[in-house]
Image (cartoon, rainbow, N blue to C red; front, side, top):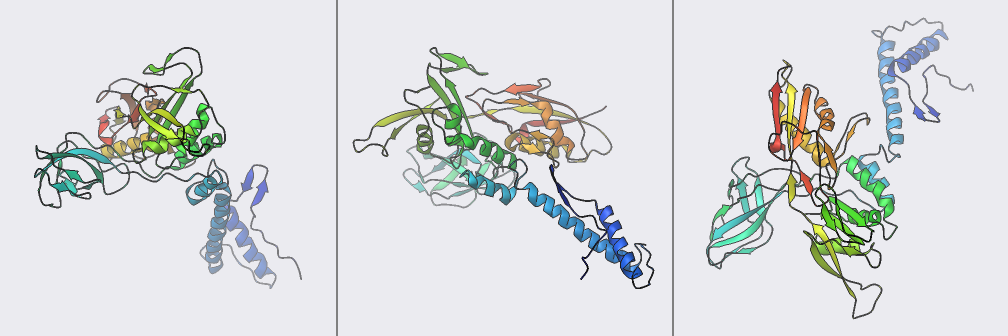
Length: 425
C-alpha cells in the first residue's frame, strides 16, 4: 500500500511555535491534488473555481485552514501571556487563584416612612433616568424623624447602571414606606475580571509563597475573592516618610496598605494581611481602619490578638477626561457615547488590541494614568479619530497629559465624566 501524499502544505512546528499556512496556499495544493488524482485515470481537470472540483476544493480548503487556525489558537492558550477565557482560568488554578466575579453598583440613600416601622431588605427603587431597578441590602428601621439610611444595590452586576442625585423613586410599594432621597451619585460596580487584569494578578501571585515583603502581602490580598485593587508600600527605614503623589505619611518600620473590596469584610482582608507580615512591622494610620486578628492556629486559648491597620474602601477619587475627535464626514452620530464607553471601560478594566501588540493598563491605586494611552481604544472603534486627550481632577480639562494617584487614592472615571468634542482639523 502506497503512502498517501498531498500538495496541501501542512502546519509545521518551529522553534518559535506552530507555523500555519495561508488559505490561498491550501487551496492551491487542494486543486493540484484533484488534478493529479484524475490525471491518474486519464482525465484532465481544470482548476477553475467555478467548476464542481473548484467548489469542492474551496470548501475543503476553508475547513483545513480553519482547523490549522484552531490548532494555533489552542497552542496559544497554554501561554499565560495569551491565554483567555476557560484556558486562562485553568492556568490560574495552577496557582490556586480564580477569576474575580463582577460586583454591583451601589448608591447611598435616605428612605422615609412611619417611625418605628421596618423597611425590609430587598425593597425596590427605580431610577427615573434609565428605569434601572435597585434593591436595599439590609432591613432599615425609621427613626423618630421618619427616616433611615440605606444602601441600594443594582440588580445587574457590572459597572452600570448609574444613578444621579435625587433620581430614585419607589418602584415596589411597601407598607409605611413614603419616599426616597439620594443626595449622592452611585458608585460603579466592576465587571468580571478582564483577561489582562487576571494575568497581572496571576503573575503577582507567585509572591504568595513568601512572607514579610510588600509583594507577598499584596499578593495575598489580591488573591482574596472580591478584592478589586490593593497597594502595599514598606517603609523599612528608621525615619518616618511622606510617600507618593499625596505625600502619604508612613512611620518608620511600617507598611501602608490600601485595599478596595466593596463586597468583602474588613476581617477577611485583615486575616490575609496578618498571614504575610513579619514580626515587629508597624502600620500607617491616616484614613485607616483597625481590625483585631486572633492567632487561633499557633496558640491555645487565650489567643494572642494583633491589631491590623489599613486603608479600606477609600472614597473614589473622581477623574475627568476631555477627548477631542476629528469632525469628519465619517463620524457616527453617537460618537460621544461610543468614546465615553470605550474610555471608561479601558480605565476600569484595561484594554488590549486584538493582535495583542497594544495594551492599556487599568487605572490603579498609586498608579500613573497617561491620557494619550487611551487613543488606541478610540481608534479601535474604527470610525473615530482622536485629535487630543486631556486628563485632570476637575471637569472638562483643557490641559494635562497625565495624573499620578496617591497610595491613599482609588481612581474613578465615570463615562459621564468624559467630555467629547468634535473639532475641525
